[in-house]
Each structure stands twice: as structure tokens, then as C-alpha cells.
Length: 256
Image (tube, rainbow, N blue to C red):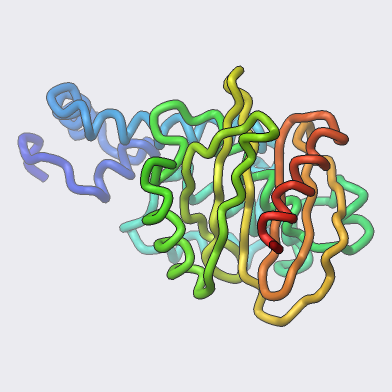
């Protein structure tokens, strides 16, 4: 390819993944120097990749079984950046029972056979809360649009609890891939910069289980519950009692 041509989206992904030849990589690096918006986007992808490797390096270093290796080799050339592919991969590996491979359950909740929503929520929390430039896709100043957009993508009306009484203001939200469909993540931040997230996914079947359950994923505590056709999880590096109070506040607002 002509080294002077501007990169397309696929090439930017390959740049992040380190899959370009030396000359083309140098040309794209020079182009990014003249296009700060694209450079910021690439920097975000690179940071997500770094965070995932830092948090889940041992998992990602495991040799996959032949059927997963073959599937990976068949992936189309056009693909998301490696950091985002790893985010999805870690989410799938967390559901080891689904694919018969990978991660040993580390929390009492998963060992007891409870919902994997806590693990998926904790992973999403770890991946996105360190983000500085783009922690969310839609900011809190567009809350009405955010709720409408995520409600449409999940196929049911959503509510956004306000946690200012607990010291946390809404930052915004984003759409994430989930094992059974789209997932909404709402992010909150306190005055010191500490963040917590509310992870919301649609369950295929009606579920009337509303009791709070707790899981500890590394340093991230997660209170989660199922209510009707939605599953919720509040995640944060907070004392258990404080996180429980916030989860109860969110629950009351979601069920007025």
C-alpha cells in the first residue's frame, strides 16, 4: 500500500495491535502526529490494551484449546483493536462453563454457582474506570439522550439512579458487548475522583430474584441482583458497607 495514503480504520486497529510492517507503521505514526483527534483515539485503545494485560495477563497468556485457536485464526481481517477484543475475550473466559475452558472461579459467588454478572461487571469496571479522556461514550449532560439510546439498545426502558446523596455524581454511560446481548454501563465519580459503575444487562427470562448478593473480584467489590428482566451490578473499590448502602439507594430508585 502507498505509504503516503492516510490510514483507514482497519489500519489504525492494526497499528494498535502491532501488526503493520515497519515502513507503514512509521507513516501512520507521522500521520497521527498531524491528526490529534485520531491520535487521541489510538492512545485510548493502547491504554485499554495496557490495562487489560496488566489486570489479566496470566489469563491472556494461557494457551487456548485447538477449537478456540482455530476460531481465532479464522477471524476477519477487519476487527476491533486488540484491547477491545481482549475485553470481550476476558468476558467470555469468565464464563468458563460455556466454552469448557479457561478461568477457575475465584469468588465465593461464582464457586456457589451464582450469576456470572458480578464477574463481568467487575471486568468492565476495571477496564473503563481508569479512562481519562473518554471514560464514557455519552456524558451526563446528555442524560436524556443516554437513557433513550441505551434503552433502545437493550430493548427495554432503563432508569439511571442519582447517587449524589452518597457523594457520587453521574459521569455518563456507555454500551458494552455482553455474553447474551448489549450491556449498559453507567459511571459515577466522587469529589476525590473515585469511581463506581452500575452494570445493567437484559436477561432473556423473567427472574423475580431481588436479593442482594456480594462478590469480591480482586479489589473490586460487587453487589448484584436480578429484578424482572434486568440484572444489575454496582461495582467499586469501596468498603463493603458503603457499597451496600449505595446499592440499596440505587435499588430504591430503580423500584419506586
